[in-house]
Image (spheres, rainbow, N blue to C red):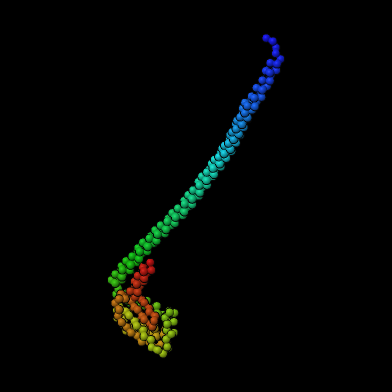
Length: 248
């Protein structure tokens, strides 16, 4: 086979034409398509990286928020426990104060009841004593006791008390003063004279004496001089027991 230069050149030309055609119609569109696909892949990778970074940021934010929420929850639980403990201590203190107040009221009520019972017992004892003494004195009353009570009366009016003198000072000196003498038994003439002489020596006013018998006195005498009354009788002494009993 002989080398033909013309054919060789034509082959070269055909080859160059083929290369130009491939370059023009095939290689360039493929390269452009590859470049666009590469750009899409790069964009997808960049987008994926961006999303990954955003996911990492969200995860970090969530973890921080979760940690903060745990801390807040723990702080809230601690505050709640502290508040509950404070409320419990206050309730216990209030309950103790109320219990102590109730104990004090109960003690006071019990003491009052005991005092009332003691006072009632004393009153009953005094009333029973007065009643018993009244029965004894009624049986013991008689002329001899009347004589002793008259002597006692005569001793007591040796000097009129201030209360009697003050009531007499309000009266006119010239006005007749009524003196009423009450007794259980009749008073004999001698005793009347002694009594009138003693009272006349003590009172400047003219005196008018009246005598009467009062069995309620049990024994003894009662002398009314104006607004002042002198008691030397058993009924008055026994009434003192009743007054003391009423004071309880």
